[in-house]
Image (cartoon, rainbow, N blue to C red):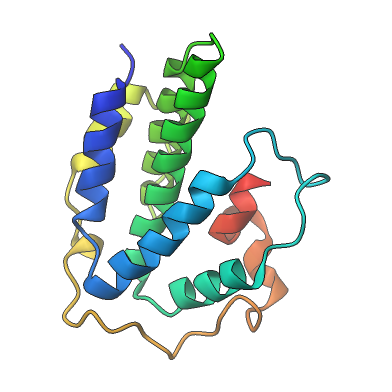
Length: 172
């Protein structure tokens, strides 16, 4: 069984509902960036990020950990939605792209929670996993972003190795 377009939209709405006001405002900016990303971009053809994208990344780093995870999943789910729409508009099936987006988003959630990522995850199990509530994703006490964490430009290079890569490195 595959993830339908409607089910993917429901998953996106479920993740969006977890955001604070500050997270939702940032998501509106990030969503525009996800929508405008080239379909067939590679690291060789993608130019350096514009200043607005760098600023959004820095703002994301200042949010609480659980909201960073929600934003990571939202970007992946939206990318899957736009990618599947693009494929279907060009006569190709969109289901594999939606399925992959849901599986990757569930893996991002597992990684954030320190859980083992299931290499045999199915789209159905991934969708269920995304719907599960977790202790780390309870609503924050305050919607104010944290400023005690270094931004991407201040972070050490160690964060880019292995499973600790920043979210924007997963797309390259």
